[in-house]
Length: 179
Image (tube, rainbow, N blue to C red; front, side, top):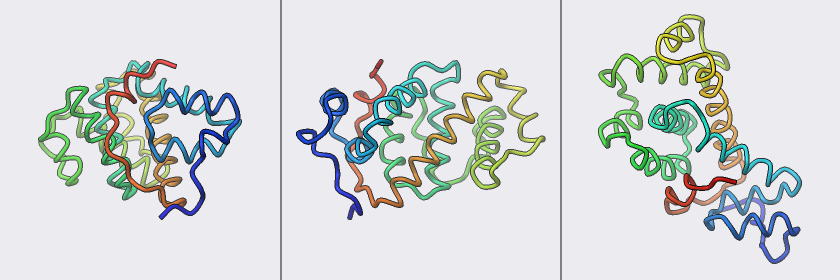
């Protein structure tokens, strides 16, 4: 059960109400709308992470699922399992990440997921993990991956702390947003 009330769009400031009207009706959005002045910029940032990166979307989504698994965030697992499939991850890849059995996914994904795991668990990925991902990712993609990891760790913390109830997946609505 949620520990704070969800934002009622009828009571929200005009910019927040307008943003909520364009979004899927997700508990996460209605909770984060409580942060009135940060909500719309946060949406733009999240939209950039989901739609404007050089980082391959399959790699991004598998990293997000790994963050969700490591953080115990069922909310993120439910949402991003579907997004991963929509952007081209296989059901076997998704299952492997969710089960923590990433050996055999290929050298690139194994390196990316090890890097992600170290960044989540240890605050910083090791020099060896960084070197391993640099074999597959440009400097831009490495930084983008770190931004994705940090964003989804933060969401996992908000969801867990505030007891945000799970929603049904909203994959196409969320990943097709451009604002």
